[in-house]
Length: 164
Image (cartoon, rainbow, N blue to C red; front, side):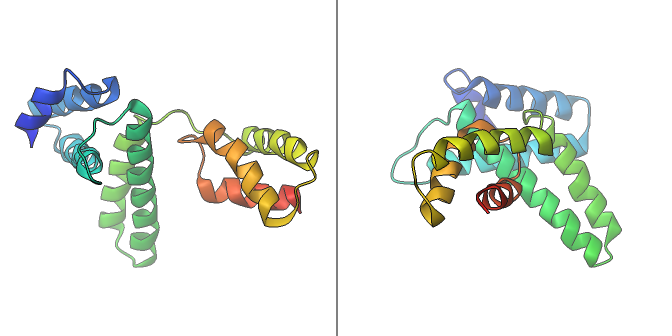
């Protein structure tokens, strides 16, 4: 896998090239945690590239989606391992999450999310759309603004409460 990834680095997104360069640096510095985490992330990116009917090169935005999904998996695993009283596994997943989160944009706080949601709600309520259609319309406005910077569940909850 690494050989093919190195060959395609010239034509891939800058974020993928950065991940590959950081993997090389982690291997050289014998940082096992970072190296194994970046290998998993790059495998997820490659799997995404080859899924579907034809192979495609992911944009930085697509790679951020993969990174967000991988970070979410780690957060969920930390919760599951903590509840199962497996602190050593929870610590490993948390450490992997920290490596992945270093490649994600800064997360929005609740006040910033609320401001984006309220602006979108004001836009949609002026159109007379109500119910489930209003939730969908607001989410369509909000999602591009918060993508990769806020948990989707939190955003959806805020949208539903704002439409109340």
